[in-house]
Structures are given as structure tokens and as C-alpha cells.
Image (cartoon, rainbow over all chains, first blue to last red; front, side):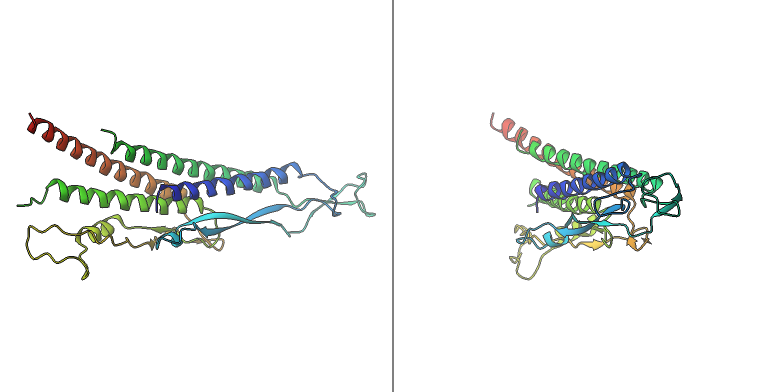
Length: 141
Length: 135
């Protein structure tokens, strides 16, 4: 158990939030994409994260202290939005157009959350640094 | 005759405080990085309990103290990690409020720095004594 553990944990948190930002940016840039390689409009993506013990087997407490790991990128299975737009090349014969199930408000909220959690992790990192610097002073005088 | 507030006693207490604060910092970092992990349970160490445990721990395997002047032995017991009461469940996962966690981290950071600073000053005093006594 040492400070390297808490650095690792904070780093895992930073990584997870950055990944989340990547996915949100992807959703936002594809908010109007009506055609994809798989066919059909773009499906909203999310990341799923799991808590993962910091591997420190020599330590009883180590298994209880967990970092975070990005498990997978999953797709949101909510139905697509349908708008009437007969002039659109991707519209069906009734003139209905399927649009991605990306909600701008939801994405913006998630983005704020990701940013705040990222900042919290940075703060934890700074706090670790302060503690290490203070501990180093013990040997200095 | 050892004084309650002798340098040795004092620094072992400070050492325990620093070590507990460090472990607590790891746990709080873990809580922060898992702020948005579904199913994650927030954990914490109760500083007061852990401190009392560290100061008063004398297990059966410890060296016997038959005289008040004997030096005790640090049994190095680990503080207990316990889940801490949170704001309850929301949308199926254990919701931790970011401000509460940050607050805990700042508080713990202050404890750590105070303990370290006190230890530093103790050492400075000891050095001063050695220097003046050597004249």
C-alpha cells in the first residue's frame, strides 16, 4: 500500500472519463447521421465501466481498493426517432426518415458529468502529490 | 522514566496517523475514480477508530511489558475498511455525491499534512537539543 496505488487509481479514473468523452463526442458528431456502414441510422453509444481491484496481492487491503476499468462500448437500444421528410434520400416510401437515437440534452449533461468527475480525479491526483511532497520534507531538514 | 509525551511515543503516534491517512487517501481516491461505476460501494476508514486501534493495540503475540519502562511494540494492525453511508440508490446504483467525497479527501489531506508537519517540528526540536547539548 503506497502512494503509487492512489496514483494508479486516479489515472484509471482519468482514463475512463476521457474514454467517455470520446464516446460522447462521437455521439454528438453523429447526431444527424442517417446512414451507416451497418445500414440504418447511427446508434447512440455508451461506455460501461466496472470497478477493478488494484493488483497488489501482498497486501490485505489491496483487494478492497478499486480502480475503474472501461469494460466495453455498448449501444443504446432505444428506438430511433422518426421524422417526416419525404425529400431526404434515406427516407422510406412513406416519406418517414429514421434519425439517430441521440438526444442532445442527454449528451450535454453526460459531458458535464464526465468533465466534473475528471476534474475530481485531477484534484485527487494533486492531493496525492501534495502529500508526497510533504512526506519528502521529513528527510530534508 | 518515560514521559507520556516523550519523543518516541509522540512520533509513533504520528507515524500511525500518517500511515492511516495515507491508506484513507487511497480509499478515497478509489471512491473518486469510481464515482460513476454502477454497483460500486463507497468505502472509508474511520480515522478515530483506526487511530485508537493503532495506539492501543497489544495483541497476545506482542512482547510482554512487565515494567512500565519497557518499550511497547507496534503490532501493525490494519485499520478496518467499512462502507460509508451514502445518499442512497439512484437509477439502480449507489449514488455518491462528488462534494462529499471531495470534502473527505480535503479533510484527510489536512490531517496528513498536520501530522507530517508536527513530526517535522519534533525532529527539528530534537536536532536543536542535540546541537545545543554538544557545545
